[in-house]
Length: 143
Image 1 (cartoon, one colour):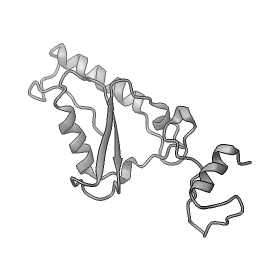
Image 2 (cartoon, rainbow, N blue to C red; image 1 turned 180 degrees about the horizontal axis):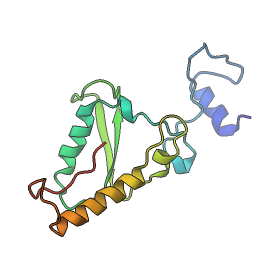
Image 3 (cartoon, rainbow, N blue to C red; image 1 turned 60 degrees about the vertical axis):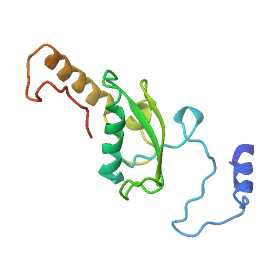
């Protein structure tokens, strides 16, 4: 059942409730992008070109004391390499949400909380001097 919000979105998209999409055609019923607003979250981690991960890591290197951070980046086509014109950093969030990673609407669930715990426990051991394999640079949580 479509509600008022979905009907308005269809109308603004030039469609109506009787429109029949072509096979494989995706029709959006909302422009919401946050889980707490009711958005569908699609995991596309494996499709993201490595250059975006490196770009986020370079940007975060300016905040060396930020231990935990989520990055929201709008990317035109995440499978293509980074360019000056195909992405925008929306925010860095020191209190990122995990639910969308653990329970995506579509795609591979990711144990982000477990990876963070493993990272923090490893960092705790490094800070205590238990391991110096990284030359004292600290540990980075990576994909």
